[in-house]
Amino acid sequence: MIFSVWAPHAKSVELLLDERRIPLTPAARGYWQVDVPAHVGQDYKYSLDGAPGLPDPRSRWQPAGVHGASQVLEARVADAQLPMRSGFRAGPLDQAIIYELHVGTFTPEGTYAAAQMKLPYLCELGVTHLELMPLATFPGQRGWGYDGVDLFAPFPAYGTPAELAAFVRACHACRLAVLLDVVYNHFGPDGNYLASYGPYFTDRYRTGWGAAINYDGPQSDEVRRFVIDNALMWLKEYEMDGLRLDAVHAIFSFEAVHLLEDLSHAVRTLGQELGRPLALIAESDLNDPRLVHPVARGGYGLDAQWTDDFHHALHRYFTGETEGYYADFHGLRDVATALRDGYVYQGQYSVHRGRRHGRAPAGVEPRQLIVSAQNHDQIGNRAQGERTSRLLETGALKAVAALTLLSPFVPLLFQGEEWGASTPFLYFTDHQDAELGRLVAEGRSKEFSAFRWRGAVPNPQDLSTFERSKLDWSELAMPRHAELFEWYRLLIRLKKDRPETPRESKVDAARSQVNFDEAAEWLTFVHNGVLVALNWRDRAQAVPMPRGEWKLLMRSDSREALQVAAMPPRATFIYIGG
Image 1: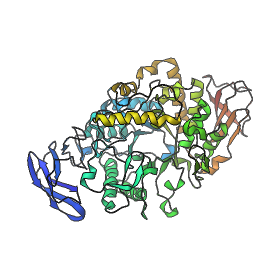
Image 2: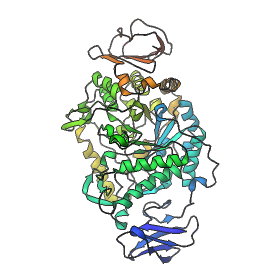
Image 3: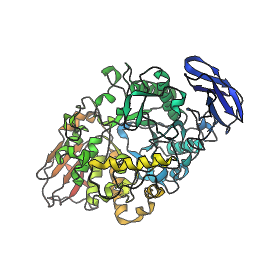
């Protein structure tokens, strides 16, 4: 077996294997390697210049955690004792309904195997893609995953690599695509040994989470190769169908070919080799259409991007909250803009940021924008981790669901949203360094200074903070939750039964189909033959209908589809026809 590691500044590198110290031989471009017999399950570390052993930066398995030994894994884990691939091909993003899932809190057990038992439920709901929050090994036994340090090793508390591969194949057998959230803008501090191996970091830039990754400085080619190889591993070895790239606005890459363009090319090439579509979705708060523009137009060639403006506009209107970034959003007019364009901020001044923000989404198609009414950030970055179900009554939750799921964009749900789960989703960690844990807890309290939320911020390090965040599946049997679940299920079915048509393929095509009256508090929008009418006044009123023949299909205040002359207060009606 060939052991290889990049350590361009080391004078010597040794493999620590079975209490032996085996010298590695220098190779090209700062790599060291040696070919020695080794078996699956064998522990090993690397020693640089005679120092104590460190985990392998490309470790495929860290069963003892971020500070423990690396372990030899099968050359291709997805082939180990698993059934043959089904030939599954993920559907296109313009027909996707994405379900974001945190493995550790999705079930009481918090494992891949337990999540696999819930796949029939997800199929009944009707979602098409699962988006797993980060799996790269991070410290301790619990966390969100955004402080991972062993990018190639799945988090051991959720199960083995083979169990992860089995989960993905089980999803495919149910016709569910799987997306994975990956973090290439920073690495976590606890268990991060990369700086000992080479120039993985740079002091030219700074992120909100610590040192920036060296993507454009001296010796950055191998750093780029490190993260691109990681992306390809998840897609090829674990058969993921796409990646969600966390906070790409914090990736500093100023070479002629941006890291994202480099990554896009590599993933597209792999997709052609494998004969199946692979998606790259960026999270960014810049409202920058260049992320999804083709390279020929000066873009990065990604497939889609999250747009937080959609969430912020809906949240501000329905909850009335104005603290923090919600101060930039102002009522039904911004909801209408979000439904037309995805972006609300297209270059105008942002009070929250103290500068102009965004750019017009020219040339961006609806399928390239991911929208949500809730996600892990917008819930978990509240002081008390409240879901929208704790802030709004059922009628409002139904309105928000209709606007999100029937918009021209790609909808994303967060686990439990579909039944109005009452459990919070809090920020939780398990740093083994007590001082780091204290600093994290203090930082969370300071982070909410722009928001006047009540109550003490739960300590992320407390086990109870994690336990409280687990879904309570018994709620599905309760009438209010069952009613909301059925509303979501029917909306998803309607969305899937009316796939996109070529005439609706551009954002501009939907722009003239949104109408509203801010003073009267009504809004209508039409997309793909479906009309959503919203009366958010506190009394009944007639809502002007667009031209066409419309048949009432669903209404939020009753399960009976009865025509009415005036819409009841705080109600949402859904029609088909046109």
